[in-house]
Structures are given as structure tokens and as C-alpha cells.
Image 1: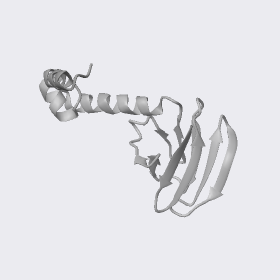
Image 2: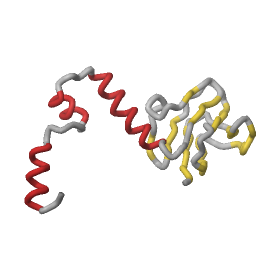
Image 3: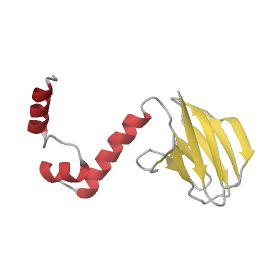
Image 4: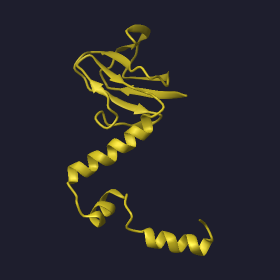
Length: 134
């Protein structure tokens, strides 16, 4: 499966893509670049110029958070692992980080703010019964 990776920053002027230490692609660009990258168990190293910028990264059209996506950002590059578990890992990290930042122990409040939990299990059961769904 391929992923569209868009890198955006007003000062972005060039990029290089390395996989397993081997240069795969390099080019100049103006403010943004959209790359089509294959899923890979080996992380991509994407170098950019100028150094010391923090470009926005969109994967398949969605703006991602560096920490949640487990992207390692350096002054001159970032490393990203685009494997088959990328979206599952991103979703899991997002829920974990939200819960940790809110420090919630009450399931009702947790479900109200984050939207996962079993608070509505009785209603769901009744709806499934009415619709004759198992």
C-alpha cells in the first residue's frame, strides 16, 4: 500500500529520502512536496533544507502530530515508519496521550471527553435488539 506524505513549510527548499541508509530520491521544492511512499518495515529518513524548521506533515491528507505518529524530528530530518500498523499505532497513541494528559480515572468523564468506553452499552444493546442485530 502506498501513502501520500505531504511536507509543508514556507521555507522548505529541498529534500532527500533515505531508506536503510540508501538515497532513494532528492529534489528541490518550493514550500511543499507531496511524496508517494510504499509501506515499509524500515523507517524513512527524510532530510530537508533549510535546517531547524518544523515542517507540517500530512499522511494521506491528514495532519499528524509528531509525537502521536512516533516521528523522530531532528534539526535536518525526520524519521517515520510507514508500516501496515501505522494507523492502528497512531490511534492507540492518540487515546493513550489524551488519557495521560487529562489524568482521568472516572470512566464516565473519560468517555465524555475522549469518546471511548462502555458508558452507552445498555443503549447500544437495546438498539441492537430493536433492529434484530447481534
